Image 1 (cartoon, rainbow, N blue to C red):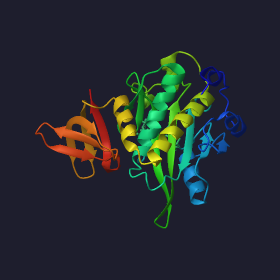
Image 2: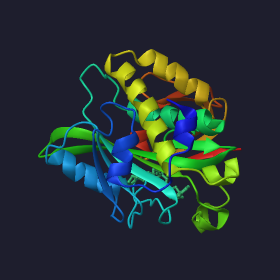
Image 3: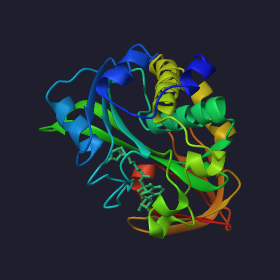
Image 4: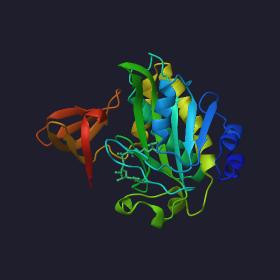
Length: 275
Ligand code: BT5
């Protein structure tokens, strides 16, 4: 990737402007763009169920009903955030599909480091932080019909040019944007191109079954190892120290009693990191 060429890209998004500059070969080979949509994940799930090919990229300038996990929302004003979803059809060699979210988070960290020298970190299970504040959230979902899985959809919401006043009020203390951290307006297109390129390389590694190097990279970028965490699961709560992350994407937690738990993000109702 040519950093200077990337940095000079415009902020405005359209299917043509995106297709023209992407450097990834599969990711984004088909681009669907909306100036306004309910949720790019909803659209990508529907397209995947209609047989859209792997790498189809759905991008929006604004989401009316951007979704987080469960019933949570992802809120970003028009023209400011990067909001996209990618259709993935991982081969069976990818034994741990949970690692896809990890791969996406690593790609975001690498892109922000490469373009703006920002030290981004991964907060388990699905956030990317800069200076301890959430700048990006990832949502991986299964596109299925009648019990048959057609594809996976990875949605990424990244705060790019939001000013402090444009961060959702209830998240203002805990969230940030590239603009706030870097101090200058930047191009959403640059970030998109870099994230997709990094993500495609990591996805290739995962698809060959070589997940260990991805897990190692995840640990390198983690903001959570060694920290105290309070996890609410469906049937119980756990308070302990995050000790390790495993190949299947789970977090290993040691309670003060010494008891060790292994938690997958799918089992979790709420995570509170204790500072
Ligand atoms: C996430 O969920 O962080 C995953 C968000 C994924 C959003 C993308 S946008 C493109 C694609 N299409 C979709 O519809 N979704 C995906 P979760 O960990 O549940 O976090 C959600 C919580 O983050 C909310 O309850 C708020 O507290 C907070 N939040 C909402 N908007 C935010 C923002 N712009 N920046 C930082 N935090 C935000």
